[in-house]
Length: 251
Image (cartoon, rainbow, N blue to C red):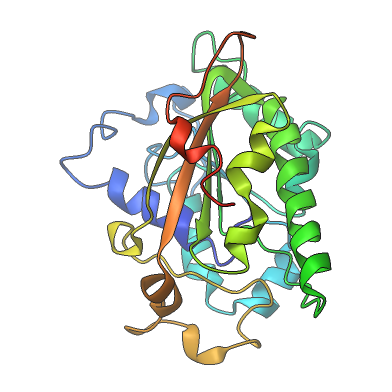
């Protein structure tokens, strides 16, 4: 959820198309021979990539987004716009995409992974405390929403930058307080592991044109560092955090 220029979803397709990828066995068989003319293969059939922006706003913010959208589309993945991550269960397009995937994934009752990289409202609030609270509300509401459309054994992955103000968001503690999730793991987010990925600002190219492409495109991540937090649904009241040290790691 929350794609900017869709370069993260596009990077997944690029990796899955590598000859050594374990996903290369997915074929057009699942479509019963019926494919869109733009579809090259079905390696992305179980991927749903979404943006909060409408398609028209997306193009204004990220003029080069067309190449990524075309790449994702060619894999058979679903691309959805106008998706509020806080209202996934209420979004008919999200539920429809999930139902299409479920037809080919036996026993699937939800997504097996939901990824939100670098959640940010782009609101530019100068009041630090108000800014922190707005982002905490965003993440909390997202987690409540994601819980409704994730499989019982699924994973929720949230990537945030190190340092302030992100540390003050207290993401692990915030999510654990919902009593719906367990912290399972945390690991560094390394943009070089995702071919073509660009960390983009919520306000788009107008905010900082020099960030598009080039060796400095992920400089802010490289400078501050970032980590991905992994959560799983708390299906049993007795479930305990496997990585307990991360539960309050952003105090």
